[in-house]
Length: 80
Image 1 (tube, one colour):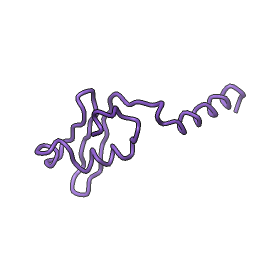
Image 2 (cartoon, helix red, strand yellow; image 1 turned 180 degrees about the vertical axis):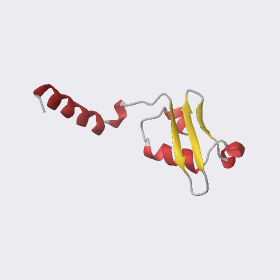
Image 3 (cartoon, rainbow, N blue to C red; image 1 turned 90 degrees about the horizontal axis):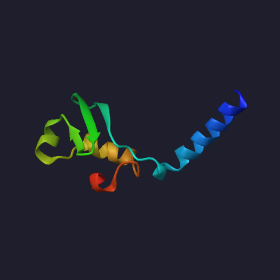
């Protein structure tokens, strides 16, 4: 590995340790649920999941799992 790449790798490790510096604005995730696969999306409007439970409550185990995984990386107002 050349010196430039080594420096970038070290910087990447610092970013990974400082998760509060990262803010996810949008994403789509395929979730392999126990019963069926699901698509979970995160946008400025918040979470959306195609599972039935989410349709009635606007929250589900899929979105909650991602909130845990992405701790401090999604806007506070949406995570609540």
